[in-house]
Amino acid sequence: MADNAPDSAPDSPLELGTAGWRRTLVRGVRKYLRDRCGMMAGSLAFHWFLSAEMAAGR
Image (cartoon, rainbow, N blue to C red; front, side, top):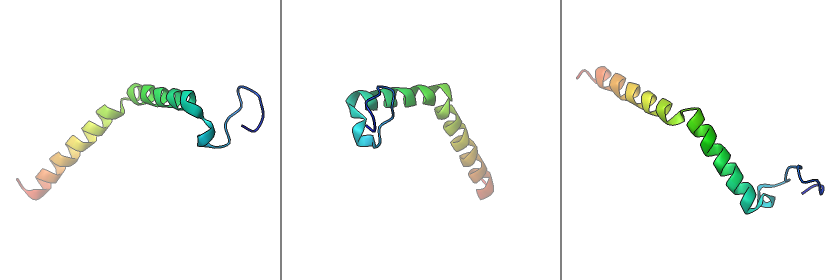
């Protein structure tokens, strides 16, 4: 790390350590669930396939 302060950010991802990677992963999963990304992706895929089928004339 650039300095010895506990709240300072690492200069590289290699300096993050196991606990830092775990916190990053947990924070990312929580944000993914909070933002309902899975629901939006499913909705987008459904509407894309529906429009592709209609464009094909079925």
